[in-house]
Length: 165
Image (cartoon, rainbow, N blue to C red; front, side, top):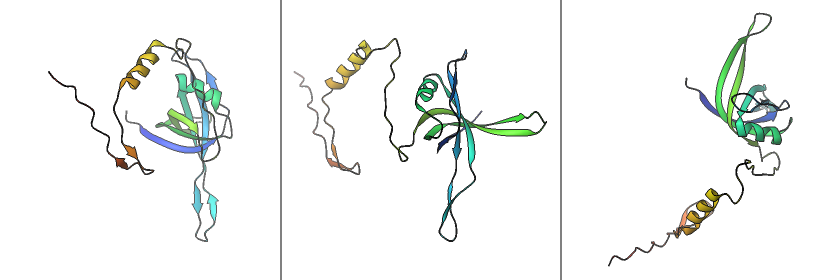
């Protein structure tokens, strides 16, 4: 099944519901998205609010439950699907569900603070981390200088080639 990838900004409309399942932890919440529409007379008004149900799994679910609160502005990226279901009165209803792969606060609307999470089996001095750090610092590749637009100001100097005797 092909699913559409979406990224949107909105406001958290419900408390985050977090629970453990046999498939891993899951967090669910709703996000309201209201477009700003410019009328012909030049004034701005809010358009109709669209509501999305957001589902997060495993580590993302845990981090969202610890970080996101009702009323906060968020940016969500994930896969969009439509769930069609029958209500108690026999009417069919549709819910837009986004299975999130990324969730973060919208920093256009305020500030946030980041705290890296570490699993219980991993510490700062983990051997893998040390090996990666050594590998990164071992490389003696010079990178070019860039201007504020990302354009190269000066090319990197050529790395010295080993001499063959």
